[in-house]
Length: 182
Length: 128
Image 1 (tube, rainbow over the protein chains, first blue to last red):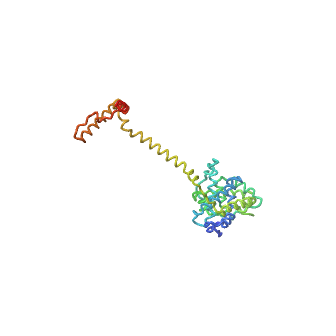
Image 2: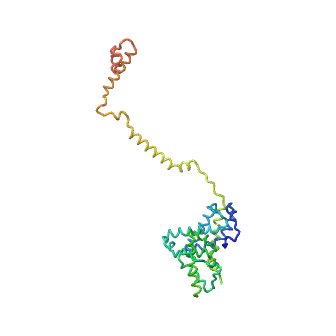
Image 3: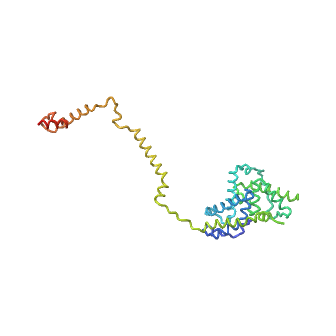
């Protein structure tokens, strides 16, 4: 299944050639999803804006290392994810990142689109997302916000595929349980 | 009914103007040609000051090690066995006499070969 970013034609080649307008198009496309992802992990507006800016600057500097243009989105989120991880390390909260759950990868049947949330459940949904342990939250956000494939999420978070499957399974199960209860 | 993506993006829509400004700043930095850096010889020398300091220190170490490991021959002679100035002078006179004796057939008078003191010569001239 193609993710949101992979269905789009983005001017990555022009950006590689150093065209500012191409960069503007790319950044405009990703600025809000990227901010959402970073904010849900960092929980601070200014810190999140700083990380987004650092991510953009790092992308410009290292665009030469991107081999597959179709994976620009995942590559950009990967940079942001690393910066969030650095932030957590600086704050001595790395233990929370290591918080693990059962490694057995269950079968994942549902895509993000099948989960629909009623207006009265929105607040509860956001609360639950915020209560998830950071590793699960990270995987769930990447899955929801950009519809990244499990393989891409594994690349972005530099985590084994089995672990990603497991985290996503438990996060979605918790969400479903909440939505069924309401 | 909304998808989780829609809910998450809507939650942060208010940040769009700040993100636009942030993006504009980054892109403006791309559009600007990088400032050409000019460096005067003074700046260049200043940038190498640590290199010069390191090289100087290395030479000082080399010099110290060199002095410490190879003392001069004079320093190696024990002080009590060093010849006195009188002995040195006598040895020089003997060497000179022998040299003159070998270079000419006639024997050389020892006194003629040895120059007198300048102060004594002045006195002799005054007497004559």
